[in-house]
Image (cartoon, rainbow, N blue to C red):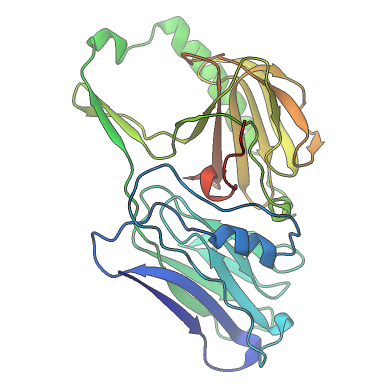
Length: 332
């Protein structure tokens, strides 16, 4: 059973913090996603569209939905701070605090925009607790809260293969990898804007069957490999890929060793989309894109066995589940 806990910090309204979360009561309580939480959270930021119902194909375990609390009539919006969203492994939370406040999550700095909005993320293997500390601009005592991060089950697959297909690169391949890595590192070294481009919501960058999910892991010849970093969508070569959300293009490259055609879009405040295996790249680093703008086309470039789009989402250095921020896959 999953119980919902809503907490309001006692004291002056200026230091109020409303946190709504799902708390797993036992170790075997698992959730596949946060239900309609991100949809509600996006609407709370002022987004007027309809992100759609959030569903996951990861597994058939129970779904726990976080419920966004309305501000209490006794607490004005200007005086309150909220955290809502998918407080699960691989999820994102959206926060609202006072402009000028500073926020940390697990000791790391969190960007806050001029309206007091911020976003936080929890990776696939995040522990069951996360600590948020908010310092209000009036210098009053810090607001400290521990968020319960619900665990999830992720698919695993064990395979036995010829060992030559599992490991080993030539020196030429290693050099290509080094060059590609340097380009990605340089793009990510640029400061992320504090502008909350993500607040305008997300759409699927391409439609089609989902062929791979976030967090799944292959065990090859007994050796666990890196978990899958995003969601794969199968589509014909040449199908348009659109920007999943507003943002700034920070990398637009063809010929990357693993990713082939690769585009990074910074959605602000450290939230980044990476779109891979593209047959065509239509944007350049520095371009500002809007949700739904065509940025390239589906392909099978890089290390891909067939045409598809791999879309991963990262907050700071934490990979999160893109399926939790976008609605149901539309009919394709």
